[in-house]
Every structure is written in C-alpha cells, then in structure tokens.
Length: 127
Image (tube, rainbow, N blue to C red; front, side):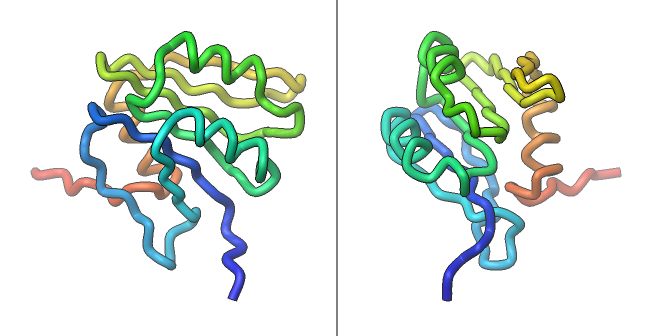
C-alpha cells in the first residue's frame, strides 16, 4: 500500500534536542529523517512535489540555510524551518505574491509550530 501523506524532511544534527516526533501511521505527515543537510537538499530536488516542509534541526549554519532558500525549486511552496544550536530559529513560508517571508522564532514558537503541524506530541500543561 502506497503512503499518500505529504512528507516532512528532517535533517538533525548531533546538537539537536530530543523531540517527541509523531512518526506513527496515523500521523498527519510522513516524517523522514535524513543524516545530513546535503541529503536533505538532494531529497528535495528528487521529490519536491511530495514534500510539505523541511526542518533543519542543528544540522546547518545560517549561511547554508540562506543558500538553501535562494536555491529552492520555484514550485516548492512548503515551509522551511531552521533551528541552530544557539536556539536561534527562522521560519520561511510562501506568501500570496509568490515570494517567501522569513520570521525569527523563539524556542516556544518552534514548539508551537511543531505541535500545530502535528509533528510532535503535545506537552501536557501542569496546572
């Protein structure tokens, strides 16, 4: 049986924090982990139409992230989330005019994004 869910490609570096990924068969997206940033770039070129988003988690520098944004295939409309080891994070999304927007994010914003996209399990809030 073919998995028709959209793909989230995740490149994780050694410094990436542990996350509660929802990689179950009932998850909204199919999560595929790649070993390096270069593999992520290659996979995007191969299956851009099936990829919903890219997540670079402590696996590249800011310069590599910006280089990736400038070389994304024109038909790729997915999000690109970048987190580095210093907890600096950026989210690149498409806009109506056809370009891309870039947002700076705090660690709480990253957690909210991952939860809202149903990529990780929600953390229970203690009262």
